Image (cartoon, rainbow, N blue to C red; front, top):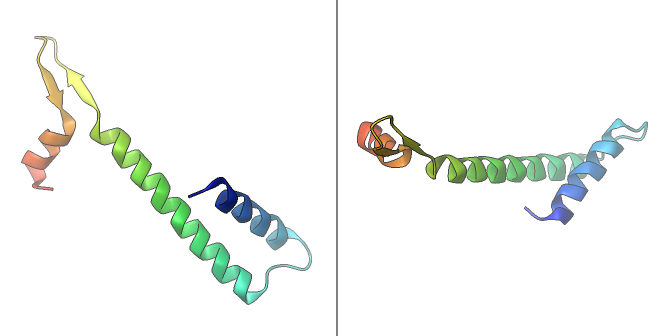
Amino acid sequence: MTDKDIQRINELYKKSKSPEGLTPEEKIEQAELRGAFLEAVRKNLKGQLDTIKIQKEDGSIIDLKKRHQEKYGN
C-alpha cells in the first residue's frame, strides 16, 4: 500500500460524500483499495504481534509466536 493509494482512498471518500457521488467504476475501485488497505494493516499487525516476547518473573522469556504455534499448530 503506497501513499498514492491512500491518497486515492481519501479522494474517493470525499467524492462519495459530495452531491455528485461515485460512478460504479469508482465504487469498485474504492472497494478494492479498501480491501488492500485492510490486508496491509492486518499483515503489519501480525508482524508486530509475532515479535512479542514476554519475560516472566523468573527471568525466562516466552516467545508468543512459538507458543501459539505449539498450541494451535499454525
